[in-house]
Amino acid sequence: MSEGTVQIPERKAVDGAISPREFIRRGAVFFLLLALVIIFSIAQPAFINVNNLMSILQAVSVVAIIGAGVTVTLAIGGFDLSVGAVAASSVMAASYAMIVLNLNAYETVPLVLVFGAIVGLVNALLIVRLKVPDLLATLATMFLLTGLQLIPTAGRSISVGLILPDGTTAAGKVDPAFLAIGRSSVFGTIPFPVILMLIVAFVLYVLTERTRLGRLLYATGGNEAATRLAGANIARLKTFAYVLSGTLASLGGIIVTARVGRGDVSSGASLLMDSVAASLIGFAVLGLRRPNVLGTTIGAVFVGVLLNGLTMLNAPYYTQDFIKGAVLVGALALTYGISRSKA
Image 1 (cartoon, one colour):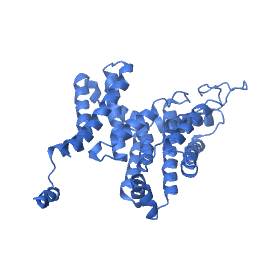
Image 2: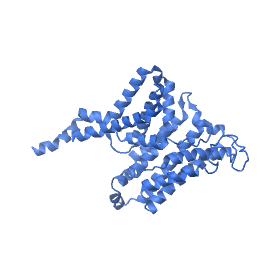
Image 3: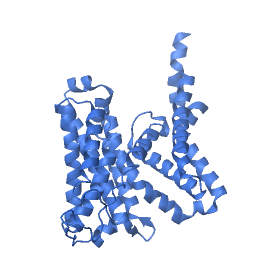
Image 4: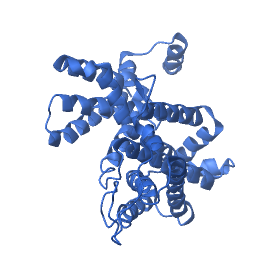
């Protein structure tokens, strides 16, 4: 009898059968997303308008890109809490480079991306070399950047005609080519930030799911000691993850700057929490129960649909975070709870 019981999963795999519970577990996020779209479309028909849907994707593109970096750090068993501060600092750095230093877009973009990579390298140095726990290291970096970004302008936002601390007026302006990053569209319909989001998601999906490097990243998060014994360079893997996370956070900051056309000191206030939410929802996509870039992208769209729908229904702003948290708890509980009950 025990042998027959052991053979049941094998027969299911051969037959290709999926139990109803397993089907619900794998599709939980998609079912909830579909339910949200239907509810919001019925309550407010303008929600399903193509322009509004493109607006949602444009709004979540930054969260998805930053969340992809967080996902890579989760894959190695770490967690980057500094991404929101890196993105906000990148907003200020990009604006400062153009408005104060009078640089053009082709000089500003590489400069800001290098800034993000350097922050990721500093995080990796703290974590890998100095053995500081990842949460403490990235939290310290977050506080450092939050204060540092305010110093060059004495706490003021950066816009054309900025009065500098020495009393002079900044002579530069935001390069139109830079603004095109956040405001242009492809084929007149698809916002360029959405294209960037899809490119980042595709490249990182291939990297993490289809390459040896990706397998080593997940192996590091699963069993670091065994991965080291297998010959992998753990220090390099962790450094790669945090540098990539910092670079993607800077890319998100560039998109925000190009969209608003100025350096707003409060621009990155919600990016950390929304990116983390997208990454965590990603655990529930297809029932994978692990960090994955595809799931993070879907999670960002999920959060975007929810917030856009609540806004169109004139839901009070102070209830939106609660509702977002409740839906996140529901999605994860549905995914993990069904699996537990089945076991």
